Length: 332
Image 1 (cartoon, rainbow, N blue to C red):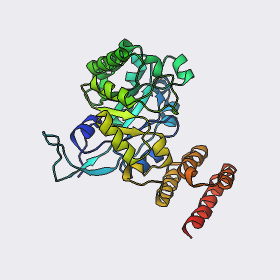
Image 2: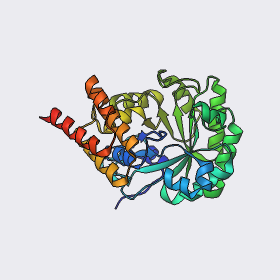
Image 3: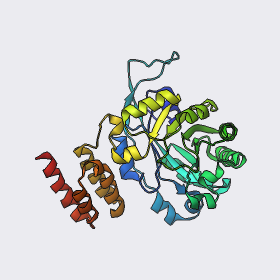
Image 4: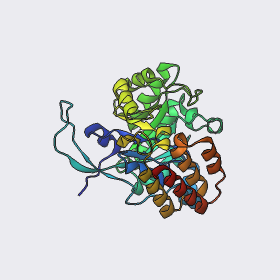
């Protein structure tokens, strides 16, 4: 029988460190379950708006779904006091974290209470850099409002902390003291994990990740940390973990391109695509998302003509036919 632990316990006490980052739209249930089946220990939902989630049953049904099969079971070794790992392993269930954007404590804590029975932790997004989020006062708009972050975390911790851990995902700041204050306020208020994206609010994903900035931010935290940014392969992820000193490493674009990345695959294997198709059909993933996910998985291997052909596919039936033809061309 598998053991259930918190996300912080998972990455701090066991040889578990691989994390699928939250992605707007893309980290829906079929994709999360797919990643978990390929050695991803912790998965995140897409960022959800706590204001809508708390007040609307329709929003809850549209934004979130899960099942007993979503979390994979991993045979993991426990960490010894000296930092080494035991030779024996035990079955440990992976973790699911629900991420919300909020700028006040009431709806965030309400969302936490509503979702508590279905996830292993709730995360406050303080890093989304999009202009609309910033103007709404959510995401990266909170990076320089440590008192608001602390109030959200503390209020929620007081309300559900005994049954649902709270985590916080940030971006680093050009002014290091602001990052330090944000992290220390969040931890003091009750945050159990700090996720650290190694870019400033104004930097795009094409800007190389600042590993030194992540390492510095990690030094401000007294709870486990997860590095975020430019993890495109298992080898790169191990290097990032080593250079930043974080307990875990999360990937977004790397896993979109190759959901089997953390299992050591250099590119998406055919059987991974087949499994994603089965999961998408089972859970009823919307066609536009299904179409986009398949494209991300195959993009690096497609010719210009094949890419154009895939973009012309407009239904699930024709997509499945296209994929079968592609597989035959590759395998035979």
